[in-house]
Image (cartoon, rainbow, N blue to C red; front, side, top):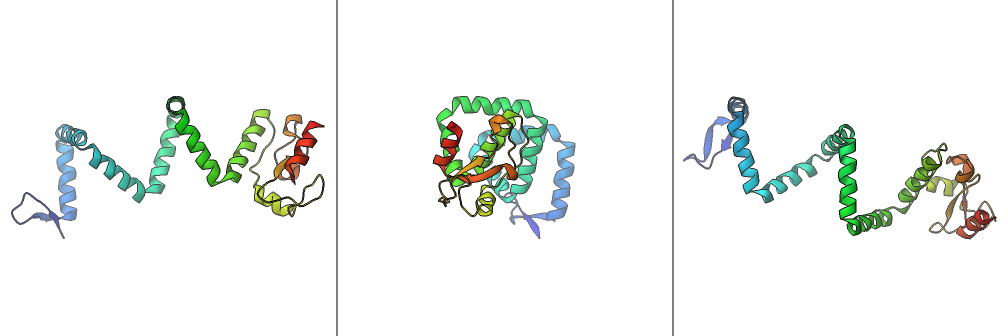
Length: 187
């Protein structure tokens, strides 16, 4: 298997692919500055192709891209946080639209993280509580009034409220009607 070459009269290079890759690596090491200048000029002249190539690589290597991004974010936490805060400030409406999309795609996940944030804010013990597990455990019945609740419309009630030091753990949460939970909160 030979490498394509549009400049050669035959359209092929005389080296096989592994040999050509080794030759290019050696050439780059010997001419780093020249190669980098040439690459920067090409990138500047062809932004659409650069974007296409980056997107193609990203979609072909999702797992590797996620690991790379995670590693970068861990080592540059303050910089990433500041950049994201600035973006959110400049793109408030776009950010809110993204939040609405994420919520619509998986409301249970959104509510799970909302509960975890609230528990952290109050400084109480918390674990990731899967709302579907709680619903199945309680067989879909409100723990306050004992009547069945609709799967689409129910509250995850904290038996001992988080605001009063209750933990966000499976043994302290139960299914309840929204009305029952709000009446309980008022009393």
